[in-house]
Image (cartoon, rainbow, N blue to C red; front, side, top):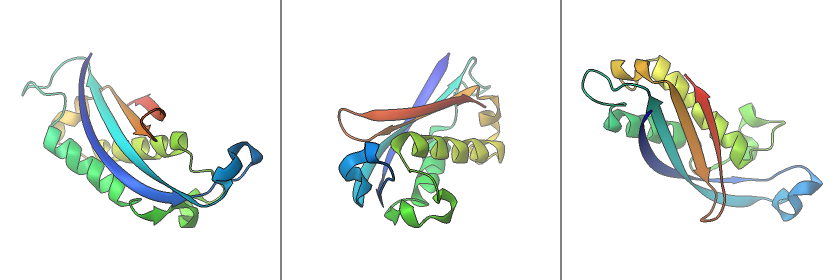
Amino acid sequence: MYRLNVRDHFMIAHSFRGEIFGPAQRMHGATYVVDVTFQRRELDDDGLVVDIGLAGEALKKVLAEFNFQNLDGVEEFQGHNTTTEFMARVVFERLATAIQLCHLGEGAMGLDSLCVTLHESHVAWASYEGEL
């Protein structure tokens, strides 16, 4: 399996519902470092997994939607705890849509899977991986 990774970051504010979250039930901020790994069994005709420039642009566009936002105020997320795991899937789904819409070029149509990892700190991260 071939892999190509791009990285970016975004900053958010949010709070959680539920005793399990302790002090994180209060409003707090997070800066996520995001790694997206594109995977395919065979390289495309140009010898690429995916165009690295287009991949970076697509990730930046997805993250711009959330950067400097209070996720508690995002209508789409009402009724959900916007945990690191939850947000990894959100980013995955938006990138999968960008791939389907050909925003990462024709070659991206041959991708097999995608893994989105959100690093919450230097010691903790969560990811979501799925087939395309």
